[in-house]
Image (cartoon, rainbow, N blue to C red; front, side):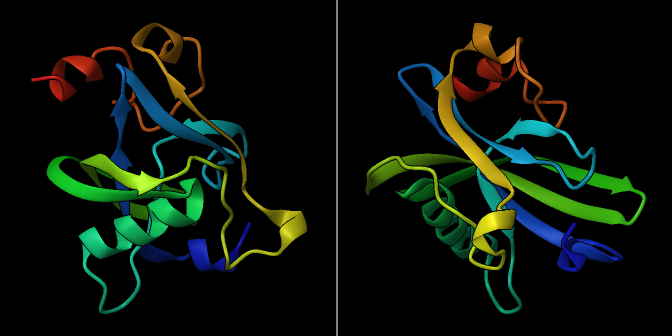
Length: 145
């Protein structure tokens, strides 16, 4: 596990992108559970960077997509062991780019945390190991209002 994720409060900005009724998720090795987990794209906010700018940058790094940031819909806090993260979740819209699994530029090629990317339907989500807890079939009711 990267020391940059531990023993400090980490602020993350994350995006919920629906396309034809399916939610975009990336699969990563969770530093919290040490299991492969499907999560919305996003990542750490750098000093002096807004939540929205961080989300645009992280989305492009992880997915290859250019997005616009919409309404904030969730705040999630994770405190487990040496991990403490505060996560802000936004609805996002695709404005350009081509979907492809990206990488974390702070981590070497052989130690990347990301391994997969895909869109999932409401029904498919229930079969996946997802995080945080609100990533479940009832999320669609909130997103399509």
